[in-house]
Length: 150
Image: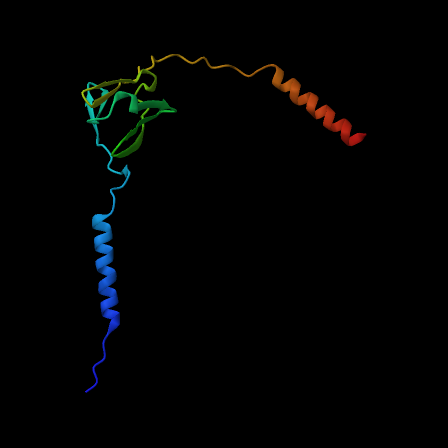
């Protein structure tokens, strides 16, 4: 009786074992991919955003407002790796993007966006027809007629 050894099954088993041990014992990633959660609450028309950032110094956190977009970013490096994260949210027209404030205490970032002031109703004056418009049309017609004749 002839016995044939099937090397393919052993090769695939060896590859699977190598992949498992390599991924299990590999060095940890230098950049963390977990993102903090941004909580949003409304208090009397004011939007209050909170982000918990334990262990992150205030210097590593930034808040920017540009063209009605609010961006919160973290860029922090330690001996254990780096944390880079940003989140941009669009501010609605009912919020005052120019009056955004932020406070950072005990690893918690609190951003306050107050409501925009409601514009007062105003009366719009309605203008009548301008006297210069018919003269401008007559002048343009005269020039066009001269160009055709000439």
